Image (cartoon, rainbow, N blue to C red; front, top):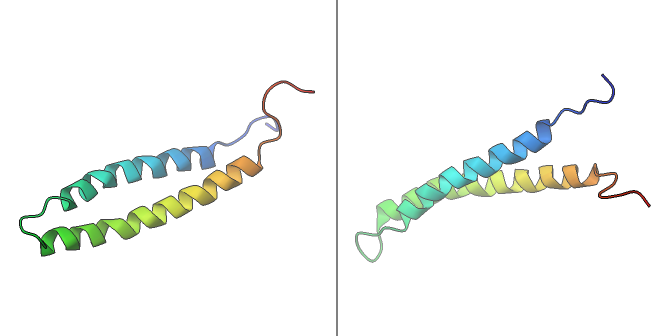
Length: 77
C-alpha cells in the first residue's frame, strides 16, 4: 500500500534509547568504588562506555535521517 510507511527507524531510535537507559545502571555501578582507585569499577566503566558511545552515535544518525524526512509539521500554509 503506497500510503503506508514503515516505522523501522523510529522503532530503532526507541530501541537504542532503551539500550542506553539499561546501560546507565551499569555506569552507576561503576561509580561505586571500594577504595580511591577501584580497578573493578574502572574496568566496568570501560566495558560499558564504548557501547553507550556507539549507540548514541547511531541514534544521532537515525534522528538526523528521520528529521530530514519530515515534509511538514502543523497546518499547511
